[in-house]
Length: 173
Image: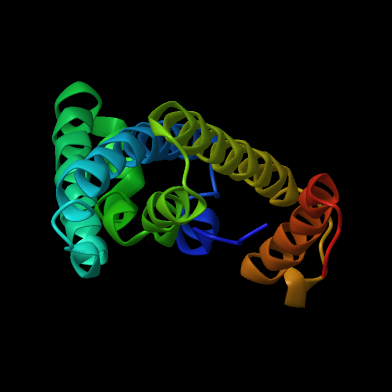
């Protein structure tokens, strides 16, 4: 459990529809970015001793992919584009995308393992995002104390979900 991508996790998880769209966009970006960054690192940066450019190269690759996704969503689904709002371009700065790319290199995965890991992380992020969105939609109609309505109950719910998902990794605190 690395707790990457918390900003869009809380920001976009108010409605299931926007969470599904964000999940698909993040899944596409993380999977493709994982493969492209692996290729750039293994074929360009590593052989030429340019490993110190890894972070900036990865950010440029991710930013380019996000721009592509943003243009595609704007063209195909204007309502989803509007629902995602500022969070769509913020995929560029989503630490989950960059974190997965860097972790894939650090662990030493081959190309296929990198793609599978990137896809798996993205699907896990999307699943958590959809779960929180579904719960938050139900919490709008729940009898929640006034001081806990909105963001406070969302943080409590996210914490409980995080604890539940930590069970899959052996509950190491």
